[in-house]
Image 1 (tube, rainbow, N blue to C red):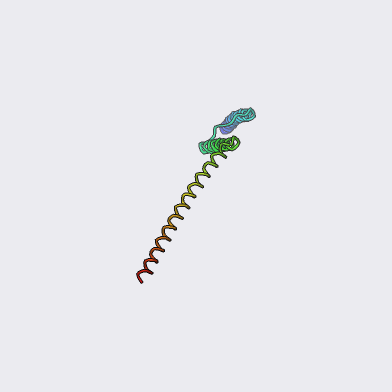
Image 2: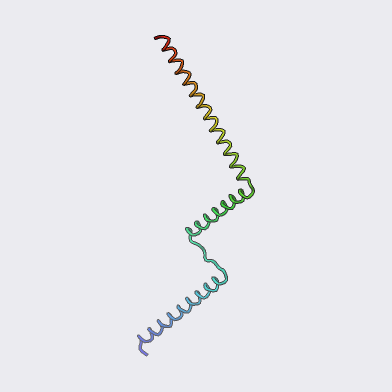
Length: 115
């Protein structure tokens, strides 16, 4: 065997051993995946899933509030408060309009008396 053949044979042997090691690593990974092992997530994937968990929890809380009736009561109270504020605004505007009409009618009466 020549020196070149020996080197090539050693290179093939090293390559074969390296590939055997890599196959063993892959077999271990496949076995872990089959057992339910989940590899660690990247930062962006972890943030994405964490955000989804928070949203799901928030939505569950909202659904629970509707089921218990608390949300309906809160919505009704909020609506009543908004309606009362609107009624107060309408009453104030009507009073302002009546005052403006009185002022205009007094002004026209005074103008008629001066003529």
